[in-house]
Length: 195
Image 1 (tube, rainbow, N blue to C red):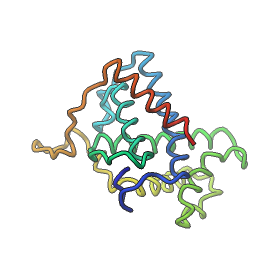
Image 2: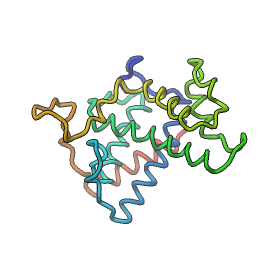
Image 3: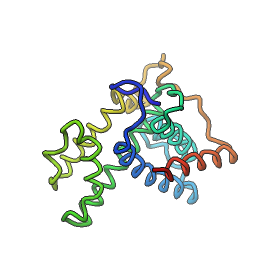
Image 4: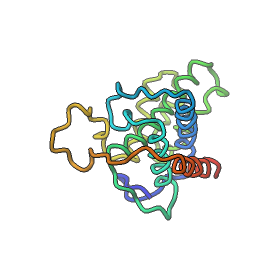
């Protein structure tokens, strides 16, 4: 369960379809980083961005479980876990950009249709469903994010934080051990293999 502007809930099936598509892509990218040994995250602005790839996987697993599992207790909403959720949605935006560059026509609109379907119940998305303007899709995806996160405080630059940081901006988490990473991978595998 996750605390959203609409109350404590899990994602709807259509919202989960969008989120899990991007989560799968984000996990693949992080696994590639782990395999290649790329550890240069110092240039990132946010707490989540500065984490090592293994830690990001762990946070993504926690966030995804909260968004999908009714029996999960809502985790503390920190800049790290909210940044993890946001990063998945913006991974989806990258996938849309690639889709738009790859071609036109209905067959090449699969990802954009997922965005429209995930918010169609609200009557949103209908005006841009045939748009070829990337900015229209970025704005529509922002609406999807707004259904899950209250604000974008997680994106506050680390360097600009006051010395008396609130618990929201603290992260005492450490990178998972090898056994912990194996468990994280199993959680992600289970979440991504389900309907």
